[in-house]
Picture 1 (tube, rainbow, N blue to C red):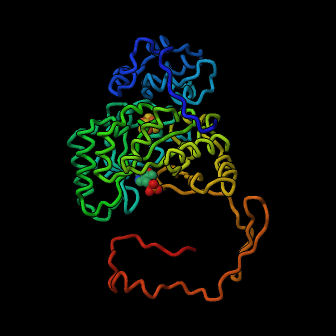
Picture 2: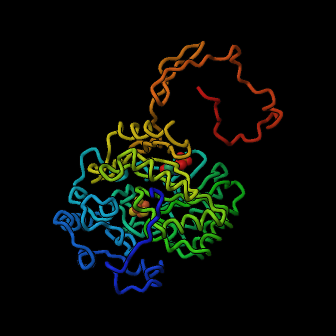
Picture 3: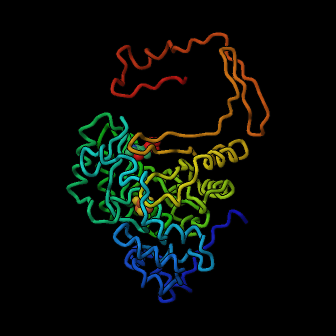
Length: 402
Ligand SMILES: *Cc1c(COP(=O)(O)O)cnc(C)c1O
Ligand code: SF4
């Protein structure tokens, strides 16, 4: 029962659409509900939602695909799909500590479409449009204003930047949503990246499997497989795992494209261990691996969606040991101002000395772990394997732990 992936019924809210139309991703994007009038023809808005739409006009774009709108619960204000798609008035109020550029990305943009914050990997901003504009979006300064439109030239410049920087072995293609590019343009972009010898890993970050899963057709899946890319999805609640979303994820995985998921912790929408565990179990059932659980960033107007840091730790504590390790994501805090991601986890270490450590396990029981007698960890064969000179002088050093 828990692992049921229900089909989405559009007949009530979009009776005029044929099944074929509703299942066509371009029809979905052409019929995005992007103002109050279009939405209220399908959905009866609460007064606060009307205020929210009015207050955020000109601050951050608004738009919901018919598919995602069909998942919204008319009866419940706190429906997680509804709350991720329809703004509230709080979103229009920026607090003093909130930032326009919460992750300091603009300081690390050597060319307009590249964020280069870490030594060996970059973020490539492929376009500035999205299928649905998430109310929790932290990249709202870029998405959906038209101000940061990344044209062919900007993408060529981004690829040239990667080509010119041999230390970059990992490219995260993001945006906006890269899966809104035509398959031809996306295939050219990932193909260009794949042709760069020092690029090992290509990840494509997208919310399309959540908001317009019909986009994931065989041709797209084949193009991503050809480029040997990973896909990183963004499911935040089990309600988003419909039969259509399942088909999209499985099509990617069946085609040989590994799929990972990042979830944003959203106060009162998914801030519960039961919800995160259920979401991750269902994702694993589709062979999608939970990767990050993101603590909310300090973007303007998002205070009402942020959880205290202790909530994320409490959720991880409820998962670790109690369920498959594969269902336990990394809890990431992306430090305000551009410090990069750090991770938080429950502490299982009670005390530590040269001779050993004492731990408390997931059931609260205490166990001792003695250290080995010989503590020398130098690896004699290492210089044989890599050569005396070191085969990878460009790489950041990988230390062997504390
Ligand atoms: C999150 C992020 C990455 C990827 O980080 P991983 O921990 O490798 O997943 C790369 N660049 C930027 C700017 C990021 O924000
Ligand atoms: S899909 Fe991503 S970039 Fe687009 S609005 Fe949602 S969170 Fe922001």
